[in-house]
Amino acid sequence: MLKKIKAIFTLLAVVAIVASCSITVPVTATSNPVGRKVGTAKATGYLGYIFLNADASIKKAAQNGGITKISTVDIKQTNLLGIIVTYETIVTGD
Amino acid sequence: MFIFSHMIRKNFVPLLIKTLFIQLVAISAVSCLSVRPAGVKGGKSLYEAFFTGDEGVQYFIKPLGFTQNNSSKEKLYIDFTFRYKDSIKDSVTVNFSLANEILFKSLDSIIFFNREERLSSTKLKLLFNEGKKEIYTSRFTTKLSLKEVYSLFNNSIWKITVINENQQFIYIPDKKGKKSIEILKRELFSIM
Image 1 (cartoon, rainbow over the protein chains, first blue to last red):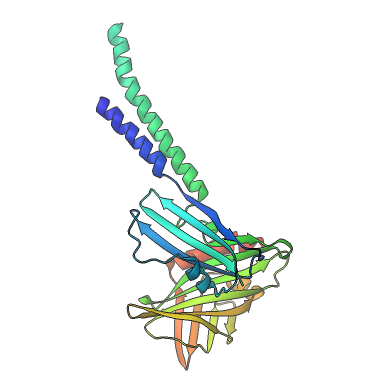
Image 2: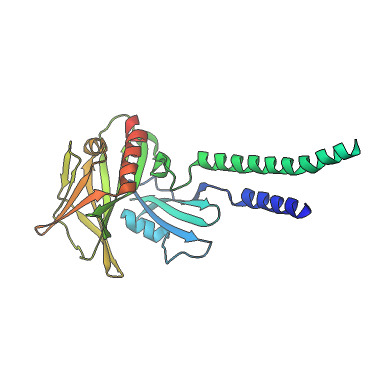
């Protein structure tokens, strides 16, 4: 009986920790206004460490948007039960 | 009496724990789904919006996927950036990546067709090329008018033709791309 209670509480704690969604946070903003170009770069990781050489760098996002003068940089992180984590870098500029 | 209270305690505590567990999972699931994680259907995961002040809102439609005759190797990813305030009058920056066994250093034109509208552009500029495992990725940029792009999103039956030196490459939206176009029409373009 005690084992069952411990197992259930452990599961409760795990669910509370890993059940999260997505959040976008700012990385940097320059004094430039929001540029007319936007570029993104995405990297998806599995089990926290398998990323398969994905590139979500600011440089890659700026390259994808044809941006040479960066205005803002945001990163969007999405977490699915802690198993699949996606990082998306979003860059605006000219 | 003692047996009765013992029986109640014996059944009640596990039942309480199970109920709490189900409630917690349900709350987590509902709160998670309402935030709309990436990959789940929903307009907000398909585009980004940036407030630019007097010029209104800048929208970035994230890359939509297209395939060439269901080929798994040859793909086209296309994204759109435009500003909108009160009227449909801006131009749209259209960037697209071609994943192909052929390296493209230039293109003659790109044509969009959705059975109602036909848009084309001959002013295509190469952004960069990169190669990985026998597949080259060529990224180009061009501009279209917002009015034309707005009518392009009227339906998801798109056909994109890329022309280079008399060679034609035809792309149609993949399953996810088709669904994304429909959601964008419903949740983004319908407010314009």
